[in-house]
Image (cartoon, rainbow, N blue to C red; front, top):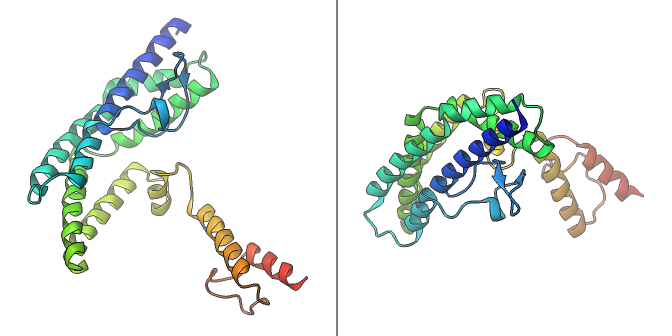
Length: 246
């Protein structure tokens, strides 16, 4: 593939991903996108690379602001239909052809290679989920929001619990299909913070809790360690104990 051909295919991939962003309201994580000077950049989905509020984002905003009571069912059906259209766009075989061809190209810069790698991973994960599941999730989330609003007004969690359980079960099913190589919790976190893992989160929260606790209560070390921190002494806890002893 010549440099010109690679550039053309890369531009085509950018265009397809941008069209999806206009439907969703944001670019899919780490999608390829153009910078101010026309160069393709690798960056998170904020700022100038993020498309304007798309159809799904606008419907969700209206649902939580101006939509009148009683319209939940109609809006849920609308969002389910749109979610199906978006999913079909995400699994377009042409995207697969583009990312697979660009994945072996030798004339992309480092940022472009990263874009292609991320786009290929997202495409492969999306193809493991059916359009029916994607539509069902959008419908449940919309119905769930309406149920939550009503339950909150009446302080009735039991009224919200059934659809919440249904949403969680469907979400777990989709995560297992899309990311079978990941533990379930890591797969869920990955949607919001790519490659973050439960072990790393534990380290972060251990540190935050310990630092906050010791700033408020500079007490002698506990023996055994206080269960507020963890079930067994972590290296951080043991280091904190040594600091208190000195």
